[in-house]
Length: 391
Image 1: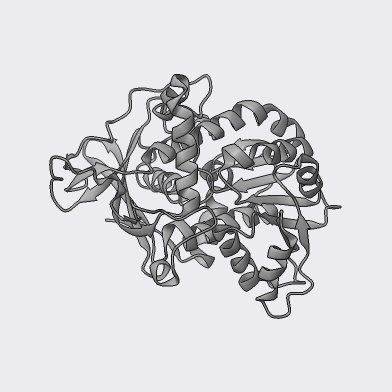
Image 2: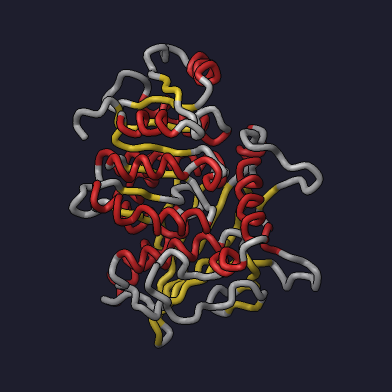
């Protein structure tokens, strides 16, 4: 790929999260430096307006590409080493771009949490991506980087301390504040609409092994019923993102050849101050949203709402005989926007410059299986995300 014009192209840069990714790239790499990058979208005038807000950015290339014009997607994918896709809902606008990247050997990252679509992309493109050398890494935002990498990190701590991996890991959201976006609402709505008319799709949403074709592991813990978790020392309840993240974690184990065991168990829940009320559904705790009128795709929170964001997840790796290894992943920035934009950008840069193809060949990957130590180092250094062993 040495002949390609760009290291990274950001597609969907006029959307809310896409613009944050673009702003992060400009702040950290400028224009005309060693990282060759470009903005892409279907509206050049909007891309120009973004570029015009930055000083001395006139040389930054702009690319017209439209999800409804596959030839423009192929032209774009052929021009870069890594594609960042922020244009969702992905089930509506992402399939042709993934196909182009798979066929052209272009590495790809996104922030998708649309379970049926990811499962479909794995089924359709795993063989082609492997043959063509494209590393396709889904869910490189808040879903599912802190959770997928958090499990990987605590498992490394378990191996260092006890010489073995844990067959059981619990993730517990200790505290969080974030804002749900218009894009998130649109993506969730697209998935719910599809599942409502397709029973097989609905079953896929509830299958923790939806991303591990040909492998069905053991029964997993119930992450939906509140209870007193003695290991965490807290009441716990359901967490809205667990359905997405648990699938990524099980695929990470699968892609690595099941080092954590074929009977590995994993769940995610919210830590609660007390037992929830009878009719309370705590799964959205920590997220701000307006039930009467949610934002539209491309819209997002105010700067004040972003500035108020944070998250802190603790992981318990249980090895039996009372042995528990504890670690946390935390950040003092908004999870769904500011932190997500940095995770997505750093995932692309890790693929472009640090993760060799012998370690991570072509195929459909998770963040932890593909990027692990390289991404942890980047996020720790550049994105204010802390990976910490705990007592």
